[in-house]
Length: 559
Figure 1 (tube, helix red, strand yellow):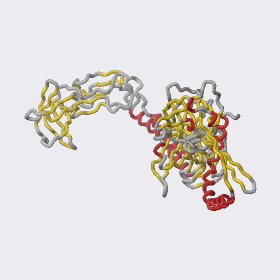
Figure 2 (cartoon, one colour):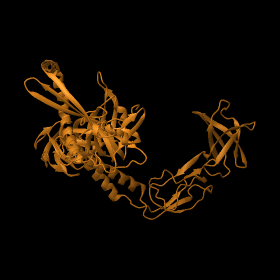
Figure 3 (cartoon, helix red, strand yellow):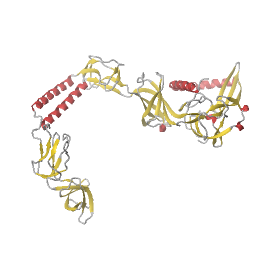
Figure 4 (cartoon, rainbow, N blue to C red):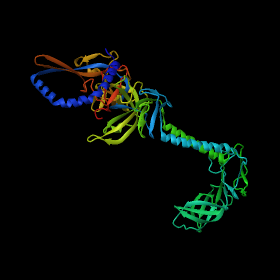
């Protein structure tokens, strides 16, 4: 006898191959429906019917497995990464290094072009680069005076540099406060006016101050600096002593101490120290470049970048490992700006867009897994839902698009037909029995236990079995795919044997010849081997049963 796993796998593969033709069959069926209906009515009128129905019970084992609810769809593969290369100026193709279908490594040159316009720009940039390098050759490279001095006299504030700091990207090294004042900003209120006298409280100190500016909902208060560090909290009071607001103080009038480049070797000042104009504040380590030399080096780097960008416009390089899937030019062709010259298709994976019905889209979520099959290749491939378009389309039934992304599939190409099943819900590992095995008394579900001497596959007719003598075990039902259902019960385990009712109906029709058709049903009335296309069941080992697919949740007669 063919095993359950073998039979299920074969049917599943066959079913997936048939999905592609199902839509065509449905269209044809609609056209033929009237004719077929007429034919059936005529033949029924000519025949005499008869039949029998037999109820039997078969021993089956409880299995452990997982039931999944899925949504199916089909489409065509698209490359996950695709680079369509177009020209930016009128050009002539000078060399092509690959043919369509060739695999290309990242960085490989696919083709080269020449362009009078771009080459003229390159010539100008090369001349400018040559002039810059001449200036660099004659420029003093290193500072001879390594001292960084104060541009004005005042109080040192907010020292940002430390010994060892690289100053090239620093906005400033410190401030020199020039007016002996600090300021604090607080939210403005309706009762405030410019030049109002206020009191500024800093810790235990109180200073007289004035509101010097009200702008954009903020009031600026200026007061005397008693060597307060930048960032110290200050509270502003009005003349009656009521609090107007609190903020962090900053320097009022100041100059910045900066350096173009270099590394700090030593610091000659401390915060809140008074210095005179020209006093040494920092000393740079030897090897610090001059500002002129630094500016010329920056100009050189910018010119080299512009030259490289223009050269790239005349050279098509693969950004990633890819395949040359389209080539629209030949060596010697002169092409206009904006012309597509080739298409490079990545090999990192594929995407598949599925149309999802409005009734199903709510159950689809990012990150859900999907199983993909291809008409052109054997086997199943995995994917993940990576995008959902919530912009619906359709005249009568609205549909939405879900995008599935796959890993690389050997032998697959963009445009291949594919089917996918998105797993929207799973039961997890659970005990599973045939739907027919579960019986009901009101809202109570139960199964018939088989004795220890029973053997899986044994079948008895209704007359040969004494149901009253069997043990009825109450179970709690869970998710179902229409053919199988998860159950839980104290004392029930995988491998336990149960009785499953099966009804066999034989119908005989005859006119000149006799034709007999037999249908097998479970006790629940479901024909064995049929199901919906919205789910799948991962066959557990040891389960006796036929081929099926189905989906949905089932939780008893009231579910």
